[in-house]
Length: 56
Image (cartoon, rainbow, N blue to C red; front, side, top):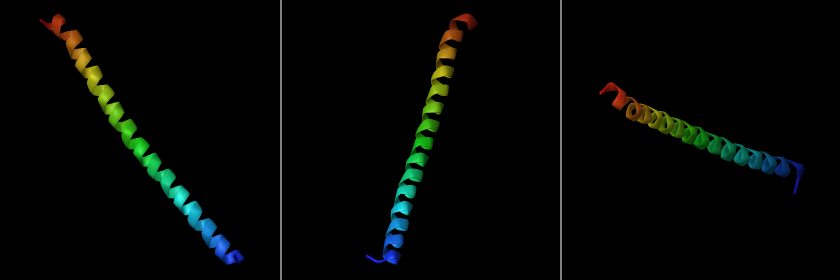
Protein backbone atom coordinates (compact mmCIF):
# COMPACT_ATOMS: atom_id res chain seq x y z
CA UNK A 1 0.00 0.00 0.00
CA UNK A 2 1.36 3.42 -0.90
CA UNK A 3 1.50 6.37 1.49
CA UNK A 4 -1.28 8.16 -0.42
CA UNK A 5 -3.61 5.16 -0.16
CA UNK A 6 -2.80 4.83 3.53
CA UNK A 7 -3.56 8.49 4.25
CA UNK A 8 -6.88 8.24 2.36
CA UNK A 9 -7.79 5.12 4.34
CA UNK A 10 -6.85 6.86 7.58
CA UNK A 11 -8.97 9.92 6.73
CA UNK A 12 -12.02 7.81 5.89
CA UNK A 13 -11.63 5.85 9.14
CA UNK A 14 -11.38 9.05 11.15
CA UNK A 15 -14.40 10.47 9.31
CA UNK A 16 -16.50 7.36 9.99
CA UNK A 17 -15.52 7.33 13.67
CA UNK A 18 -16.20 11.06 14.01
CA UNK A 19 -19.63 10.77 12.32
CA UNK A 20 -20.65 7.84 14.52
CA UNK A 21 -19.54 9.76 17.62
CA UNK A 22 -21.50 12.87 16.64
CA UNK A 23 -24.57 10.74 15.83
CA UNK A 24 -24.36 9.08 19.26
CA UNK A 25 -23.96 12.52 20.82
CA UNK A 26 -27.09 13.80 19.05
CA UNK A 27 -29.05 10.72 20.14
CA UNK A 28 -27.87 11.29 23.72
CA UNK A 29 -28.97 14.95 23.60
CA UNK A 30 -32.42 13.93 22.31
CA UNK A 31 -32.74 11.27 25.03
CA UNK A 32 -31.66 13.62 27.80
CA UNK A 33 -34.11 16.29 26.58
CA UNK A 34 -37.01 13.83 26.54
CA UNK A 35 -36.06 12.54 30.02
CA UNK A 36 -35.91 16.14 31.29
CA UNK A 37 -39.39 16.84 29.88
CA UNK A 38 -40.69 13.65 31.51
CA UNK A 39 -39.19 14.64 34.86
CA UNK A 40 -40.73 18.12 34.66
CA UNK A 41 -44.17 16.71 33.82
CA UNK A 42 -43.91 14.21 36.69
CA UNK A 43 -42.90 16.98 39.10
CA UNK A 44 -45.85 19.12 37.97
CA UNK A 45 -48.21 16.16 38.31
CA UNK A 46 -47.02 15.30 41.83
CA UNK A 47 -47.15 18.98 42.79
CA UNK A 48 -50.79 19.14 41.66
CA UNK A 49 -51.61 15.92 43.54
CA UNK A 50 -49.89 17.30 46.65
CA UNK A 51 -51.54 20.72 46.31
CA UNK A 52 -55.08 19.56 45.43
CA UNK A 53 -56.18 18.58 49.00
CA UNK A 54 -54.94 21.93 50.33
CA UNK A 55 -56.92 23.86 47.71
CA UNK A 56 -60.21 22.09 48.49
